[in-house]
Length: 429
Length: 165
Ligand code: FES
Image (cartoon, rainbow over all chains, first blue to last red):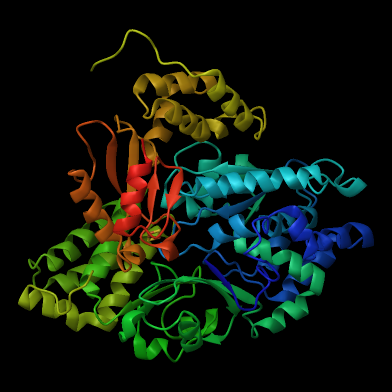
């Protein structure tokens, strides 16, 4: 369920219309005018990238890297093939926004990618789609057909010399492929094991060619920025946190779903939009940016606004914008046990600290949950974590450690109670 | 190991689908279509035997080991026989907060099997899954890898199971 409040991705989408995702409905709400504007007014690549920089748009996949800057890294005069890749491999627990984009407004993504291709002089793009959402992949393929038939995709777009081919690529179940270099390996038909960086994808990406990778929501924000101007987008949010953003709210709220709202909206307001806490229970804690983000207790969270800077100042991260809400009945040991199992299960096995360390983290949290924990286990967890974080090729290792650190920082007493009394303080799930 | 005398084959329909995937990639990068080719073969044969993996590798034009690596790395590929309907329940934290384990327990009780087991009549296999990117619709389950079912309360599960032949 998408709840449109105010934002650039779902503006004007009539969810009750069964063809709201199609090209006609998209064009009726101003779709493809940004692309036409570029091709008819002779807007240059530099002008497009400058507009992207003005907008303050930061990568919506999790890292929050400025999009305009990323686009400017691409060697525009490189003589050979270059690639544009969209990362719709949305597997970070709590995140389900990109799914709604490709299901409910796929043309915004397609138009954003075409514009990106034009701005960086790229003629071929791929959208890598999360394995579990096959029906969404089919929807995206159908939208591509529409765009091709309308002359927005393919050779000589709208009668110009600009050509851009775009294809969907369906994943098959590996969280690690959300990491951009693992995604590239997977797109090449291999195991999704991350590559060493540098070289960065801008110089050595897909098939060894310069490649730019952006998240689905990032691309879907581009048409608005070109149509309305970067400044207008920036002003929708707050300085350094330009624009609006989709927040996937899950857990103990009355109305879970995607909420598109301005960056800088207070968390308390977001919680109200979700109908408040389920069954009138009390808020205990929130994981504000997907399962890898350190948990924040209710009192800190209620002081935060939903943007990169505020959440990072509070000691966590906005990540993908996945907000996991937990009420007073949630056992933090159990919650962490489930997350630690996930990272253990999804480690690609390439780096020893992560492959072995995630197993250690899971087994130790598991034995605490089972009532077999030892007093020294909490220090053991932190020490294992310290031996993983920063010692691996990709960020999965860090992602496995951050939830552990966050839980022990804010809810240590709950873990101690578990070890001492061999049972939960609260029922859990 | 039990092997049949006849190597498995890919139907004309599967081959046509794989060809469509191959056309997306540069001619010298056929390997990029491997994942889709394995998916298509799995849909046809329900699971990926060693023999079937070799057939797919041959069709795509890569060494069998390359296909084996992919088939064993991605967890939606089934390397052992499964029932006519594979049901995967997400129990990751966001789903767990909204009834993921309850849906799993209900399925276990109703089907009389645990995770990674198949009913005696070969109809259902139950699996535990990780986040499917649909947490707002919890509890969610995935039928045969491709059909996502949202808000799976016990009533909705009963209905779904009755639909599956
Ligand atoms: S946690 Fe179940 S779909 Fe995300």
